Length: 315
Image 1: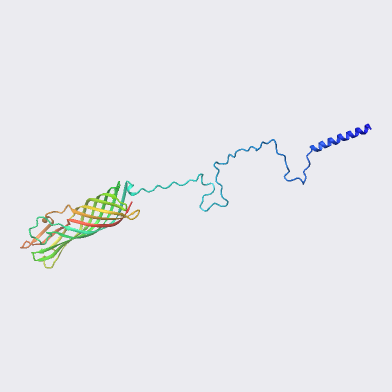
Image 2 (image 1 turned 120 degrees about the vertical axis):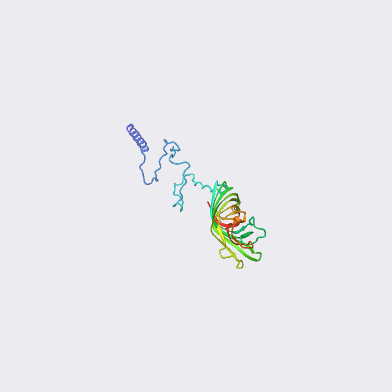
């Protein structure tokens, strides 16, 4: 009986140890276990797990490129810095009245009249040949001009031009026969104008004063009457240089950013013309009644009046 009890105790102890060992051995992997296999949470790792800060990431983060290729004309991804940079604006050109210096150049056409004033020392009552009284006529021409303006309000203009003038006077020969005597003079001239300039909304207004130098190249005198007993060639004209004083005013219209239209009115007095009749006219012959039958006149006008219109460019 005692032996049976001892065997049963030994068997019970053996089964108990086998159960403990079996409990400590992990079961083998089986296909019935879900995938992935359940793993116990690693207790050694803190929660949440520590992660290093991504030092390679810029701050602020770069904008994400949208899906697909970049739009046409846009910069490649990553080429534009953050924040986007814009090109600096081009500085605006200063207005003409704000610049320390401005210039213009162009061409103008001139048209107007001329006057021969009555000379001194003419015999009383004499109205015959020899330009002894007042005469008048017309003139025309063209000129190139160049102008510089300093500090907006002060200008200097240089002109180089051509002028053609005809002067005519009505005469009464021997107090009976009427006729016309005339002379034609043409040549090159150049001059300067000192200007005071006033800017306006549409351009500029100016007043000017300066000398003009006339150099005649062609001169001719004529007598328009067949009844005056004067031989052919008895009336002649002589070229004479003149120094004129130009007094002018004008308006310049700014058609656009560079084109301008100058309009001007000039009056010029001859400073070099003699006042005496015998200095202006060289009398060659007189008849028995004291009438001049041959003379040579200095082809000069006493006053010139011209209206000018042109076109030019500003710099």
